[in-house]
Image (cartoon, rainbow, N blue to C red; front, top):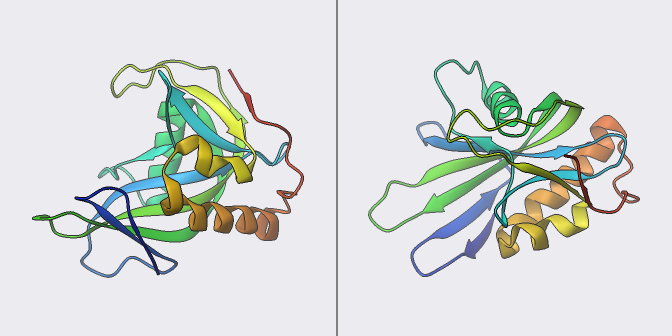
Length: 172
């Protein structure tokens, strides 16, 4: 467990463990890794960066389905395989603590870009070496442990050579 405070009102606790029974899973985000380049997808819109993912919906059979649906809707990226990494417990004054799940995923393919059906944003697909992801996202310490775990997972489960990724670049 690692505690990181992003600002005065919100704290995040990183857990490499299953989400406890009864804790709401508000979001599912993925470190999606391209097997050919060993780079991780970071979405960009108007200078703001984020990981692919979003809220679980009733149509989603499980967390993999949530991540796969969101990645396809937002960035037109097909997710071939996933691995659960852990969750970030979000603590806000006056709120019940909730979870934001983090997963590693193997990119199976890229579709043609088009606007996200939920909001109409056209997101750019920045592919980053794992070592650059924390700085690009600008989230500080809160993302360091999960991105390192995602890189190790990709190397161990899928044989992706994350120690020698190609340089950052857009897949538009």
